[in-house]
Length: 469
Image (cartoon, rainbow, N blue to C red; front, side, top):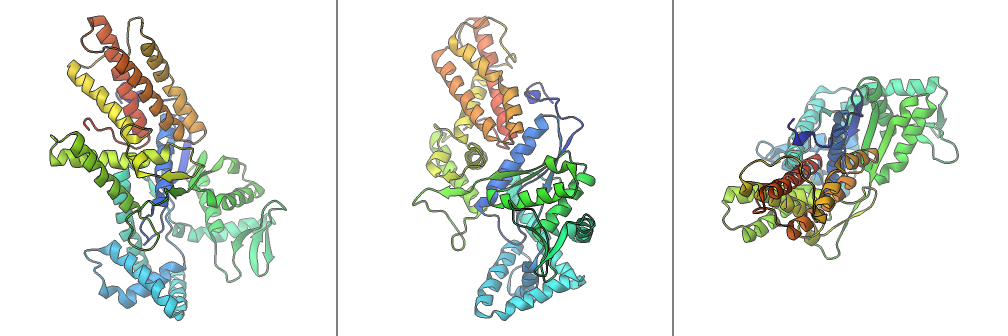
């Protein structure tokens, strides 16, 4: 790494491993705007953890199991040849998913047919398993396209199906410890008066999310050797994770205290706001990102008409996608987030484009300066704005620590806005280029330090820093 890339890095985490579960969509369904929060918050926490010296394994806990796949497989065998799976595989997959549910409303017997096909899948039917695997592969290609756009990466895909062979061992462990009891034909673990029982297996023999998450937690600790096990999942799943972690503690796993549900609130849309959708009230993530890019392209063309088409497209992508991500990460994750295009895409307010614009201003000054400035000033700083800027820049290490300790990327996002505000005062109140050599040199050192911290801070939020806007 270069000197700038090491800014803010800590040695507190070496030798420790974090497993973090984020994004994790459901196979065959397009990611909707709600998936954005789990995706960008999880990736940002991953990035920030790496600045603290931790080894991080990003886990995609893909929703790839359940009776819906029996329904999909039945629909594919029945209607698949009516769709263009060769050229439009994911669109075709989603269309037969929608069609099955529409047809099942008119012909409820289809539900039983889908359930039977899933039973065949559970029992090892190789033909159905081949169709199921095709669904998973098609979906992962589609999701990866959006993850690439958002700067998101996973190290492992461990869908729910991965734990099928481990569920029996979980139940046997609970039974051995005297925790598993029967309740109305189902198997549960009683959690006292403060929480409802944790349902382990339904009366019809089907396993549940809790069973899979227990198996997953044990796998992450015992096989992936996780020192911290993080789940970036919406706040509506808080009770579920409380139950799972409590069952782990009752089972004698002392490491249960190192399992954390990283909860986040929901999106709220500004009244009257219209979004492009493909069906009903679902707001698809791809539509949101495309709208952001298209809206940004118009603004960029107005502000900088001399750009080539390729330059404009690249900047519109970086700024548009970054704006959506920054809006999500700016607020405390546990709170709901309002989606308002005017604020999200503003080049002047508390927004991603504003931070990127300040980075561009620093880059422009350095180009005009004509050489690489020193990293930090070497003279006594006389202007109050200089001293204030140094004070804020020097806080970067502490900010990254605080952001990690609370698993809250908003601490970093808000800090970047503070850096921009202080730099703006410094820029407007002090002459930078054209001063006497020692003053110019020291002020350009501040410009370089600001540029590096804005760049690294945005990178830790998985937001790109364009050189022009």
